[in-house]
Image 1 (cartoon, helix red, strand yellow):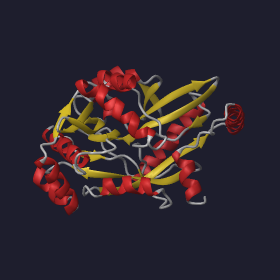
Image 2: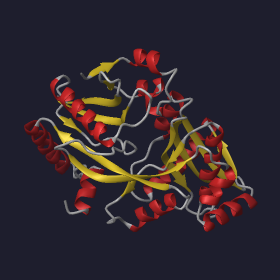
Image 3: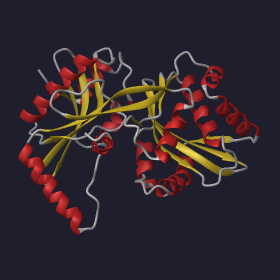
Image 4: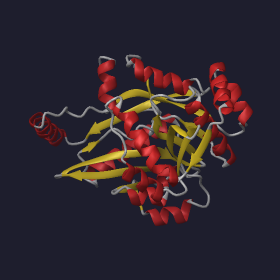
Length: 334
């Protein structure tokens, strides 16, 4: 039987014995309205966010289900648990649509009768690694680039003092590809709410900012959420050096893996996106494949909502929003 668990009761029961993903941190839950921790009698649990917009209610998974040991389920059990969640959300929470999960929330199997696409991520296991073994696993030219950045005395800086510099460069970086970006205020909110679960790092050469990154993490694992890079870096290896130095720091903190977040598997991607995925792969990371999925629970309400949104976008001369699932389905001609 599926039921919501209050965060306070959840932490009292599990926090001492489990290593949980960053999204279960109290600061993260407080920062995001409508969060539900759903659990069943087997003490399997998952994190879902409920949102209502003008009477239209959606749910979004923030992490795949974990068992009472904090481990992933088998693919079949995971899909079955998600089907239980779907029934609970439809009957008890009156949810109209389960939207695409956040892109680091990768499922092993989609539940039945949903819309899904294969999706992946590049991950590096950090447990048992040393700085030397991290380097050894990288492509030779990455090792050379990192060595070059070190010779040029690249300096990594951490923390809130780097917020303004990172935010400005992040904005410029994302504008180069007409992509959405986090504002300085939004990044500051994250850093303040997730004092122990967010890491902001920048890299400088000759006191000139070369790039930066923002991670969300716990010892469960680290997730690369946002990045920034200079138009004209002093050294091609500056960003590689930054990722490497951050991984070394995470090893010291006992973090299990470094997740670069997001890899499209359709094969029909832009040269820029392919370059980004190659960048992630060449660190010696392994491709982990899974699925993103979504499901309409009230067909007529979903059609009505989409119709209203379509005309609203058309009147404002805006594009109708298309999620990763639909982008990949089109690329795969599904």
